[in-house]
Amino acid sequence: MNKKQWIPLLGMTIAAFIFNTSEFMPIGLLTDIAQTFSITQTQAGTMITIYSWAVMLLSLPLMILASKYNYKKILLTTLFLFGLGQVISAISMNFLILIVGRLVVACAHAIFWSIASVIAVRLVNEEKREFAMSMIVTGTSVAMIAGLPLGRMIGLLIGWRITFLIVGIISILLLFFQSIYFPKLNSNAAFSLNELPQLLKNKQLITIYGISLLFASAYYTAYSYIEPFLAQVANLSNNTITLVLSLFGVAGIGGSILFSNFYNKNRKRFILTSLFCLTLVLFLLKPCTINMITLILICIIWGMSSTAFNVACQSETMLATNENTSAIAMSIFSGIFNLGIGLGSFIGGQTINLLNIQSIGFVAGIIGVISVIFYIRRG
Image (cartoon, rainbow, N blue to C red; front, side):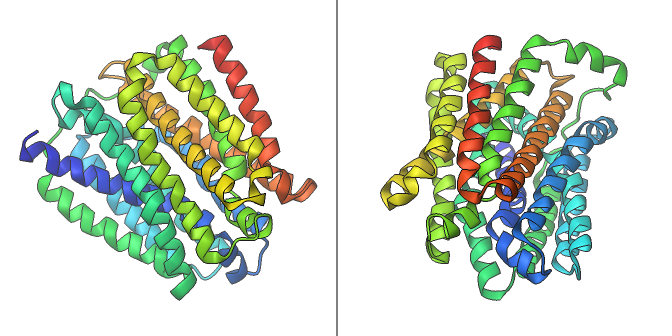
């Protein structure tokens, strides 16, 4: 790889870092945000649901609208919207304004994750394709290792608003960086809605979308409320919770390594193993809180299976499409995955209201079983 390839790829990795940091920050700061606006944790959790469902609804129309422009213009506009949304969130005087700020971020999110992997593989030579995708995954994993815990620590020390503001500042700096180093990478011809029915007849894509919806629903039924779960059920201190949350990112790098080494050997088995591991972890979530070692172990497996599954499905999506339709197919994937995030957050909140917070792992595990059965029948 030459300088013209790896510098903008590094910028995309940093972008993946801040976008994922922003997406998961409310999970680590849920209790503090709820206290600021004098609402319950479940009510604060609706912010995650609204954000995810906004991404779901906006991904396809925004990507179709953006497809007529070159990738550099799309990326820079996305970074600007992302920074603006962070500033609105930071200065929000009530929960409604915070939601508005998060919706602006959701618009940027909807476009970014539709183009991130597509741009990454087009920035490099064909033989570096998997490496480029791993770089995006690395940015995501580092966000879990450092971004989310650091954001949580800043939020606990000087307020969650400062956390949002810092992310906004980083995004603006990145905007200037990419405006200098990102090449004029043309997108393909603008996508027409007339092509959409043909895209949705792709059986391989439909299987990927279905399994992604179930996976995300299972994952986020438990993960959306992992912070209060660790505090109330596992009785962990704030510092220990931050440490445990960072393990998801460390494990994510492990998931990326597994993808690089094993995915191409047997793609179906790789995805099925990721699903099975997640399902097992969710059922064991409550029993493993009795011991710190077992809790750490399942969090590591949880993080590895999530990252491995996510990057595998992105790769499957691009393999099932061509250069003309890959960005749109990825936008649909992003929308459906975020539908799953929203459903998971909603189901987790209702589980807490109707049963108790201890039950979120069990309910999530049931969805995981459905995902395994679905993939065995369709994969």
